[in-house]
Amino acid sequence: MDRMKKIPVREQEPEVRARNFDEVCYGYDEFEARAEASRCLNCKKPGCVEHCPVSIKIPLFIKQVKEGEFAAAAATIAEDSSLPAICGRVCPQETQCESGCILGVKGEAVSIGRLERFVADWGRENGVSTAAVPSRNGRKVAVVGSGPSGLACASDLARLGYEVTVFEMLHKAGGVLQYGIPEFRLPKERVVEPEIDNVRALGVKIETNVVIGRTLTIDDLFDREGFEAVFVGSGAGLPKFMGIPGENLNGVFSANEYLTRSNLMQAYSPDSDTPIRIGRKVAVVGGGNVAMDAARTALRLGSEVTIVYRRTEKELPARAEEVHHALQEGIHFCMLTNPVEVLGDEKGNVRALRCLRMTLGDPDASGRRSPVPVPGSEFDIESDLVIMALGTSPNPLISSTTKGLETDRRGCLVATPEGATSRPGVFAGGDAVTGAATVILAMGAGRKAAAAIDEYLKNRK
Image (cartoon, rainbow, N blue to C red; front, side, top):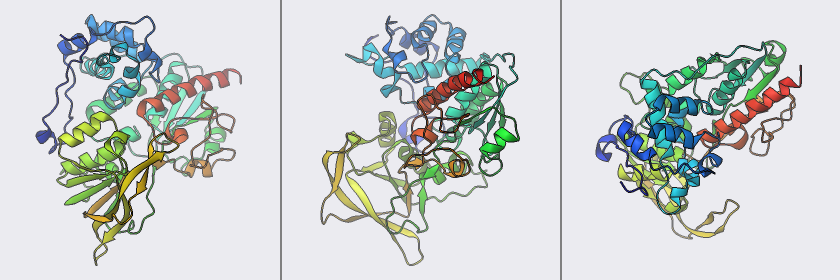
């Protein structure tokens, strides 16, 4: 075994997986996991832990995997993460924990994410329980939103003895884990729901179909329901559009709606009652993970798919693995291209996406080179379905119905690094504060807020 290279992971063949919604990656078996774990140098100052937003004890759990102590490894991870099977699948480990691995300097970093997934899957399949309900302290905390930040906050607070109730606006718990990430990347029944059940096993109550700001307000949670603190982890589910002509034509979707129909409502299944429009030729505008998810979903529904992105492949914000999978599956990338109009037919349906060629100029505030239009370079991409995957912002419902909650120009809640907002007793974290980000960063924010809520309530006896 070459210690400088990762143990490869088995996957469905591209031509097969492009026509089904089964999980692409099979994950490690026990032999492969132990072999990969044996690559870890067990550093005295582990950079991997420093780069993990929830500070999992990575060298310890990897050592336990190496020694075949899988149940112990599951318990170690559970001390800091309530969603290991999810994070092991969808988090960008290459820019977080694995970026701090010393092996990555001259070779390939240890596959920390794949090992985390292996441990979580092994624990689930072998009935290992890491939940222990602590004694209650009689104090109540409300959590708004059952996405990654809300679940992480609720888990930590429950372990500290609080009576925690999570309020979810949809009919299923999980937030973006349910509606945003496709089945072929994150199986819902097999992975997401068992991990949410683990949160419930800590004594956390989850109430669905409750819209905070409509069904109940933040003030109601304090004044009528008796909660002493509230954590807002409502995510960023409000889609953005370009504001170009033709965006109101039949056949223009936000990626949010398109993915919600497919993921949460399982519109891809013949047994589902939820309709989904299947285009013959689909253009997906954007270059992030959501764009890859929408494009790969459309492909599996039978469409010919083109991703339209205004910079080059080097600047794509999506995970390298997702771009690689999309290319393998036959999705076309139209780079240095920016839409300027959606063209329609006489019936008001999309017929093409008019675009301009771009070139890269000087770096912008993000450090990436700014795209500059090439004069006279207009051309059309034939499309009967256009999906806008341009990012999201928080829904203003909570901030508009709650006095004293400060927001920034993007509509995000303003909070300290520990999650305290401008309203005493109200904390916030995850995408509701940062805008759309990663699952693990949202979880880290939820954990920090839980610690801050604990400190706040201890000082408020």
